[in-house]
Length: 386
Image: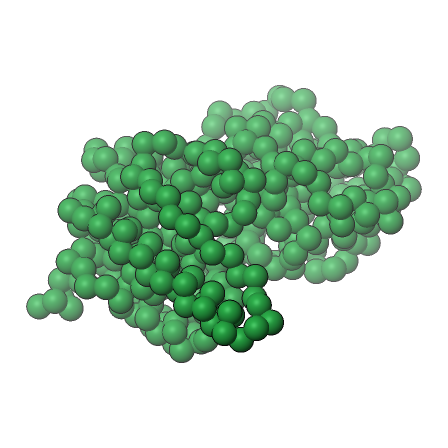
């Protein structure tokens, strides 16, 4: 089976995802998986500097028009038309560069990999089996809901959690097309004796939206007031760039914990693994977004996770999470203190998470599940063409 993956090539969480999936697919199939990519126009510092996850991809550059809506109607319409046209040209180029492959797998995020591009790509005639992983929905497809029917032209749709599957089904996408595949993680050597310290919080690509950072900082203030100098430090990181957002600094000052926070900001996946391997607790009190990446890294590294039942966390953690309610810093602080004061309980959660990750989240497991979807999608495609 000849496979092409279309998606972000830069050192972002999406680039790391595609590299890991590609590597595992190649290991299991013995065949090279092509990677087709372009600049995306997201404005992320990693994208602007062209910091590649892998350079051995079929990469092309194309101008990307930002939204910047004009108050002048004709200028607004012109800009919209130009953006729409460039998205069409990107879809054409993606298809051309993946020519000769039997399965073409587009990873939808935003901008050059957003819904407009995905829908242009699916409208075009193709002799290949086409699969779309929807990592997130964008504003355009939520504003114009009927457009989502175009997903039904795909041979398979992949999402990472059941909540997104339900949302897509409500947007006129056939449920039988939608498959849930968890976010994968790298399983390294088990660590039973390493020194651990501090709390870790993952802020994703948008630190101030849906991650619960205010609740984390308020909980840290409660923990500090209870434990004094014995209170752990909090390390914050994510894929939001190398500079700490001023709003986040203001929240830390408001909570009175600015001196107890280490702003690591954007770090490599290797550094993320080491950070989780050396931390005491992972805090994921998300109210939205998606937390499969940090949950998987924490689980693989035996790091207990205090989290809400949002952001795909129940599907990724099973019964191994330390569950809390949304928007409840008092409860979060109580769970932190409970676990800090009970090493046996921490080890129990860490061991259960590790076993869960080995069984359900390892990249080789994710690659096998994805490959089986490719097979069933090929069969569906053959039936539709018969």
